[in-house]
Image 1 (spheres, rainbow, N blue to C red):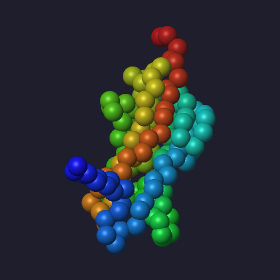
Image 2 (cartoon, helix red, strand yellow):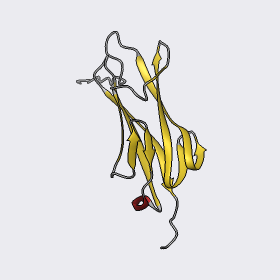
Image 3 (cartoon, helix red, strand yellow):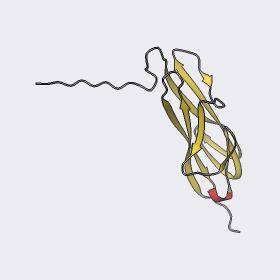
Image 4 (spheres, helix red, strand yellow):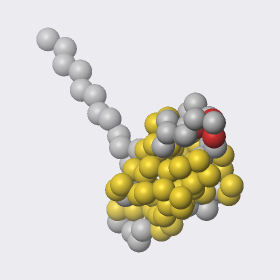
Length: 127
């Protein structure tokens, strides 16, 4: 009988690289309500400031929100980013729910780690 063994590596398990965990949160909300660390309701024109903390094990956590290794995006494209980590709702986003993704490129392993927060844009009054 032939037995096959397989192993899977965690994203940051390259030799000499610490394992890392992302902590992606909504740091603040304007013109809306923060429901939890990773969920918010915003009105049109409302904005969320995003925070991505990378926690290496072992090591000291660091803020990667403005890092060149971090990208924030929505899919499909919703709202707009007024800066690297500030997203704002447009009128076309009324009554929609969607995630915002943080994508961190770990320079030690060359891997990408993705995390999400969830946004709900409130209903707009009929014009």
